Length: 281
Image (cartoon, rainbow, N blue to C red):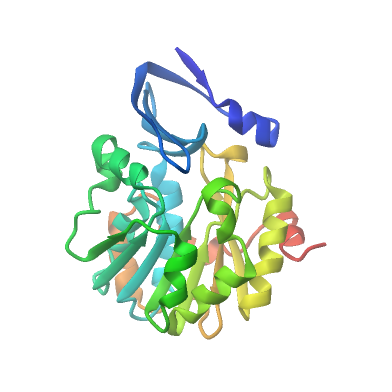
């Protein structure tokens, strides 16, 4: 049976179809969104929110390694990390691969995403029960307001700027995120597809540049996301995007499917069309 993600097509004009097996493994509607997991023939189990692609077992490493290892390897000693969103657990799993990390706070607004992922995406969500992880089922907009000088790295693993994710794309929110950082802290949000979400991406970089002194885009492929190409933003006031601990980065590389030290530097050499979006040309 072929499943077409029609909401993706409605938003971008094109999308993805998957050959699936049987009925949905999980299908519930929370107060925020429709949460579904189904089994595909070639990509394993698939998570969608409101009919939009979130992750698949087979290609999730593209996203999760990029959002986690680039900023964490750019920090000399990341001990305390906040993940906003990311209820599927993939970003948390990658963060915990860094031996310096002592504590990970996960702030996810929708408990059903965590529930479904633990049940049907164990290879992605398997580290959510790690003793170093604290899970807060809360609105990150409110959660971050009370956090001052707490984190070395904050990863904003959010949905697109719609539904429960819309409030995470404001100057007030990122100002509060910035104030949650310790000295040398780094923030990395996903920053949309430069191919499928040009306007959203442009607006996001205008916003980020109002808050942070350094805002650098980096890009990589994600086969099942719109356009197959995605971006993230390296943001800081007092740190740069170079590898700070080569031994730790090489340790991460040994276990990674995507990340390596050469890739770390290369991903910041973004194409000209991406640069024009980021520079608001």
